[in-house]
Amino acid sequence: MRTNSFIKKLVVLGTVGSLVAPYCFYPKFQAAERFEIHFDGMSIPISIKELIDWSNGEESTNSELASWLNLLGFKERKGLAKFLSTPLVRDKSMARQILRSWSGRKLLDEVSDLILMDEDNTGESVLDTLETLLNKKDEVTTLDLLNSLSVKAIHIDLDGWIEVANNWRSELNKQQKLISDLVSINEKSVKREKINLLPFEIKESEYKLISLNVTHRNEPLNLEVWNPSFREKTKKNWILLMPGLGGDRNHFNWLARSLSHNGWPVVVLDHPGSDSLALEDLLKGKLPLPGAEVIPDRLNDLDSVFNAKKSGKIDISVENVVLMGHSLGALTAILASGVKIDDQLENRCQRVLDNLSLTNLSSLLQCQLVDITLLDRGNMENLSAIVGMNSFGSFLWQKDLENKINIPLFLTGGTFDLVTPSVSEQLGLSIALSSSPLSRVLLIEGASHFSPIRVEGQMKQSEGKDLFNLGESIVGYHPLSVQSLLSFEIIRFLEKLEEKKSIPSNTNLTKGELKFHILDRNVIEKLIKIQ
Image (cartoon, rainbow, N blue to C red; front, top):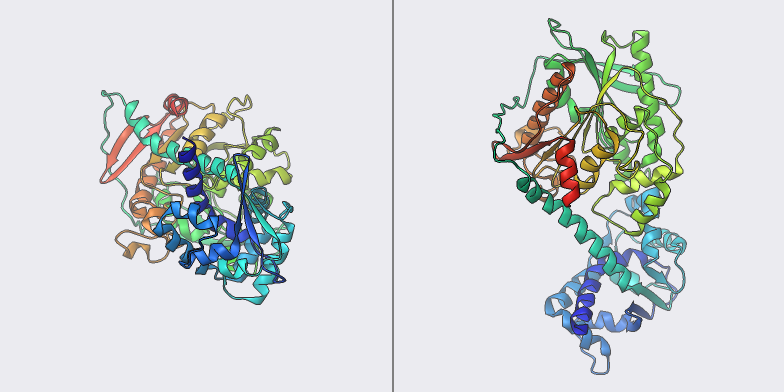
């Protein structure tokens, strides 16, 4: 039993390698001597020189290194050699800006508790020396770093890494288990609806581009106003649509056009400083990675749109509004409603960040709000509903929160989403926030965080592509089909909303090759209970 545990920890050590390297950046005075691997009250010293020699296939009869690293097998030896010679940093400007961001620093702080340079666990020296090394080299490999360390020993808390790995595995298992749980709670008598999706492109509606000068920004606020081409049947609501972090209004023309074609006036806005231009500046190494610090300005952007409508600069006659957004845009919509973040956020975030989970990257943005002051906005007048695509905010509010908002929420998510995973985010957020019986969650199997984003040229791609040209394993299944389904279900929700009725809650629905589920509070509570 002891042997199996020991081997398991060696295997975990192999997976830690890629995370160890970024914390080995020190200026070149003398090479680091050794790793110190700590677990089960034991400490095993590993000579860095012997580690490199072993990866190159050299054996040492007097070394304990080969005897226990050989338990990993030849493939791991070959993998270690490849790992040591692979560039860690290809774009030093972008790496520098990521490390200067709040999220980058927070990850650095948390990993520094598990990987210590001598006795330093602050992470400050790591950042300083990383900056120095990046100024000297365009590409940096792990081998470069190991030969440049100015510390005697790199201490690795293997027990801590095993706990982190177990937390990751647990979160991934929850995502996988969700689908089987949906099947298990499905009643045989459920009537499966025939869904006729909207066409990919609707050409009738056009928008007017408006530029607003606002006091809280140096540059104008650009927005699109989509007014329906016909006004035979006036809708009771207009829609304010917000992109997510790194997104812009062009990514959601497909949705604005569909909504306008079906009778809703729509305003889509860009958020300078956290749009696609800001993302380009990050990639060029000009600006740091934007985070939750952009939320106050985003909320001010919304206020500027409302004031422009009130003054007549935006020609929309109806008063009631539906706030709609993707990712950070969805969180902005929720915060604009006036709901207050409870006072236990800091305590929850301490536990979240200690787990170092990369299966819910939105946790970093949520926990950054501990350090950001948001003004008390009060309850928003004329707010009819909130529609959030890949929304998040589950850490901001307790599940037993009494101060729920009686505003219908329509939250959408996908089973491939590890940025805002549906179990902890869309499902958890719906339970925590909304007391409205009209609230629903749309869960699409195979959809990812990037599925709602449409970019130029996507219509010419048989399978579609996402903003970052990632593969299907990250983008998810067929973004164009997902977007068509989103259009249909969002419009259906809005139509029922105007009648003050709810859309039916059904599991295991299909359209083409897409499988999806529309969940009410009762089903969501069952799912969360059996997770």
